[in-house]
Length: 264
Ligand SMILES: Cc1cc2nc3c(=O)[nH]c(=O)nc-3n(C[C@H](O)[C@H](O)[C@H](O)COP(=O)(O)OP(=O)(O)OC[C@H]3O[C@@H](n4cnc5c(N)ncnc54)[C@H](O)[C@@H]3O)c2cc1C
Image (tube, rainbow, N blue to C red; front, side):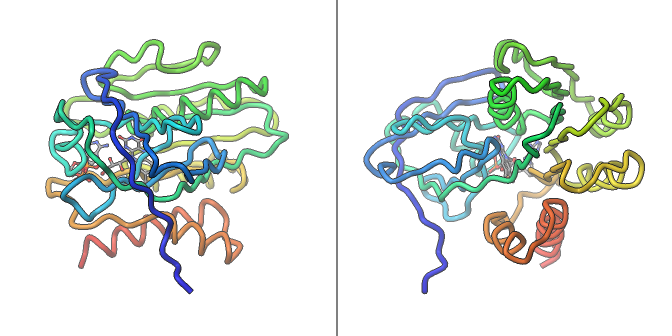
C-alpha cells in the first residue's frame, strides 16, 4: 500500500504584495479539483516550487473550492523566498501536498490566546475568524516587521510587537507576561523552533496548563545556513495521533526530527 501523501499541481493565478515581507499567492486550476480542506484552522500544505524537489510548509489562509490562498513570508534568503520574491511567478505550476491541521481547542474553551511571528499570521488570522464566529473572546500577540493593520479580523484584541534588530524575539517575554484569563481556554503559538521549546516548558511547569489546552509549534529554524532538507510534519503528526500522543508530544517529536536532520 502506498503511504505517499496526495499531491496536487496548482497554477499561480495571482501574486499580491500584502506588505513588504508578505506575498499572497492565489493558486488554482484543474489540478486542485480534488483538494479538500480539513477544516482545521491552522491547516498547512507542503509547497514545492518549480525547479525544486524540497518542500516548505505553508498555512492554508483560505480555500473556497476553487482558489487556495497562501501567504508567504519573504526572508533574506530561502528556497521559496527566492521564488516568491519574483513578480513573474503568475502562470507557473507548483506542487501542493494534502493539508494537515493541528489546532484542537476544546469545544468548551471560553477564551483563546494566539501568539506568533509573521509566519504565524496566516494561521492566527484564520483561527481568529473561526473563534470570533463562535463568540469566543480571542487575543493575539503578533511580532511582525510590517504594518499589517487590517490583516486580522475585526473584533480580535491585538498586541503588536516589533521584532528586535539583533536580539532574539520578544515573544517568550510576552508569554511570560500574560495575565491568564480564568476558566478553561486554549493557547496556540508558532514561531522559531528553539524558542517554542522554552515556551512549552513554561506552559507546562509554570502556568501548569494541561497539555490539551495548548499547541506550540516550531515553524522555522534560525541559522546562517540554508536548511538542507526540511522535515515533513505530516507523517510525524499522523503517527503521533495513531500512537495516542498529545499535541505537545507530537510537536516535540517534530523538533527532535528536525534537530537530527540538521546533525546529518
Ligand atoms: C505547519 C507550518 C506552517 C507554516 N505556515 C507558514 C505560512 O503560512 N507562511 C510562511 O511564510 N511560513 C510558514 N511556515 C514557515 C515556513 O515553512 C519556513 O519559514 C520556511 O523555512 C521558509 O522557507 P524558505 O524556502 O523561504 O527558506 P529556507 O530555505 O527554509 O531557509 C533559508 C534561511 O532563512 C531562514 N528562515 C527560514 N524561515 C525564517 C523565518 N520565518 N524568519 C527568519 N528566517 C527564516 C532559515 O533559518 C535559513 O537560514 C510554516 C511552517 C510550518 C511547519
